Image (cartoon, rainbow, N blue to C red):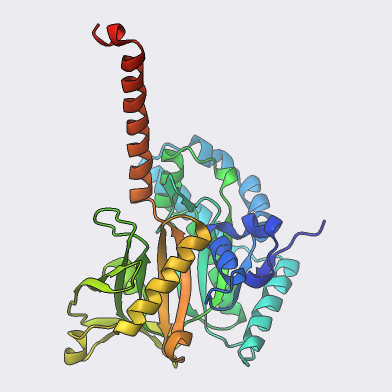
Length: 359
């Protein structure tokens, strides 16, 4: 059967979802559940495998990775640099290029653009969102990418980001075989965010699942995720959708698109605006309701990235960028349950055989 090199979120079938990586699979799932996800497509792992397999085998790079001692930092950095250079300098095969560019042109047409739609190009590794081996932050995201050549170039940059020193060491330390980790790439309409942030469908301080925690700041969400600004913090009741507490901080800068230069720039926020809450009560309620809906869709607490589009109004402005399982409190809950069960087994044993318990 002919490989599929690109798939739109709305059109990916159940048996194809694994080829989209963690991020792509999540976006496809949310899109097909009619949640507000910006339009886009995934360059599948089939494209990655077709591109990378011959390169890695011919150059003996899989073998070199298997023998690598990650404690030898010079050797790790040298091999990482060699692999990434080989990827960036290798041309994508014509049939794969044709498939990818066909999807990009189709995406442009959805927004009445002719090959110049700004997109986010985001890595989506197949192991990145495992609850016990989160790959968050290990691969790259590129914003405000415009034009066919730039899209192809940034797809290769995403593929190459799978082989940074940090990512290689992470996989070795967690016993993840190189041949099992593949890279899909998300190509998605860029959101002109006026406000963006992160929402967790529990209280990250104590794991309380009756609360929704929201962090937000002006502009693109990378400033929140990276910690370059101190965002506003809100805690909402998940049942009655009332604000429980909030902490408003001075948000001095924002990441905004520079349309003319086709890039993202950091700008200063007006002094008065910087001290104001960046979300209204109505926006907090809507974000909380959507977060609860996403949690129900996945059946577990979620860590959600979102944005409010400056080019839309009201509820239409809200867009989902990513959702992945919350891992900190979910893992603690599992550990607590194991300890509880172990304790109960001991208690039951002592009740059944009280003499043995006194030994």
